[in-house]
Image 1 (cartoon, rainbow, N blue to C red):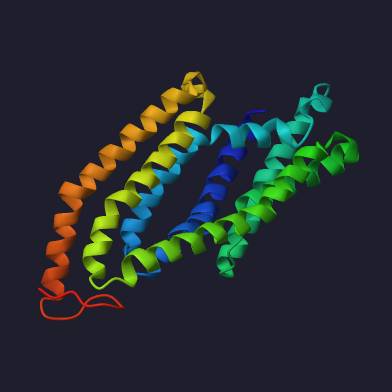
Image 2 (image 1 turned 90 degrees about the vertical axis):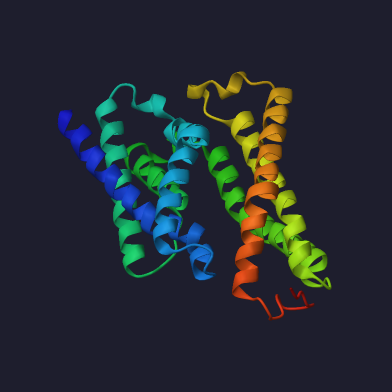
Length: 255
């Protein structure tokens, strides 16, 4: 089955290219559109952090797709069918993502992979081999994720609007809040990596209190870095761009 390995690697590369052209564009589109990042910087950051995400926290999702959606034990008597099915999944998802990217349609790789996995199992073994409870859980997450992300986005906007944009000196308030936002963001993401990270890297052996301490330490380090390194640079840059002009949308800040 050497040919299956070669074809699988090629299709996986094409699928990765489709993810980079579609899923990554969804994640970094707002940053590039707002001018925070250039396209080149977005490429570099996406390459780094997509790889880190896959290595650090991608194990659980991979394990779910590997054996959580379909009962792989039903292929124990004929593993070649399972291999062919996995190749078909890669080929179908890669083709769909590249086609969707060509027509500028933002789609989800996760939706495509789950649908392709269910499709190949239905063709080969019928509906009995599908773990429907897991499918329902995944479908519920598809519904809840945009609702929850939209709710969090509204809450964050209200916080920024009240604490920064509506103040008499929004620049100073924004710079004051910057380390706090970095602390929360870095601490939360670090906690999720330490608490639900890859078992292959032995993150599962870290106790909950250890994950909390690690996340608080990383968040504090990020906040101090922003406070003493990033904030002065931002202040000097803004003052150089707007030496005699009002800044932000409401309120005035003059130097």
